Image (cartoon, rainbow over all chains, first blue to last red; front, side, top):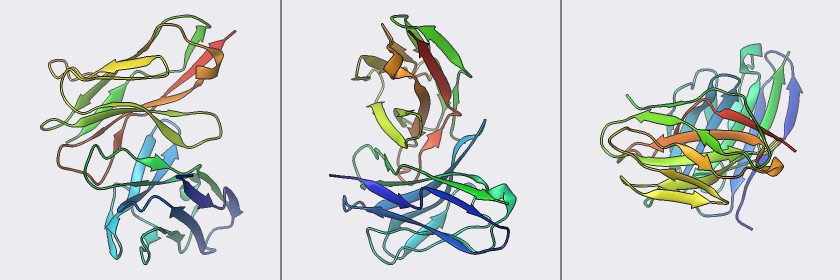
Length: 113
Length: 113
């Protein structure tokens, strides 16, 4: 089954404790991206990757890091989480060319206290 | 810049009512347009899309027509069901800009029996 998986689905942590949210896709897509969803703001892109070892900032990259060492994986790293990073996070992937239809993971709800 | 404006919700309808969710966009050139749906507790999934002017996207009884003259992509359904209760997002990918989706803020739809 074609899918994007994220782990964990729920995470409660404290300010300053480094964390990683994993994302994996099995569709051999070139592109991957992280979004955060906040009430009244819709989805905003954090980072995206066009292929292995190629990443770039989205609209709200501050406080986040990413890496793309393998085509299927695109982890999101919060090295020193703060309460304003409490949000619902989505990973997405899509292939190059065509209409750029994106496939989304189920989401990770992060709470930073 | 590129942006999407959709009607604010929440929208509450009775089963079998007619649904319209307005969406207008600002973009250079000819973007691809999408409607994504987010059911409770799930990630986003593509509902329908249109890639050029006058295209009509349709799926599950939902329709939207790409209107270049009014820069609009309104979502319609003739008879909603309780199972259509979800958050609906209008989005665009800029022409030649494959790295991101630009989302509207989302419209929450509740359908009562």
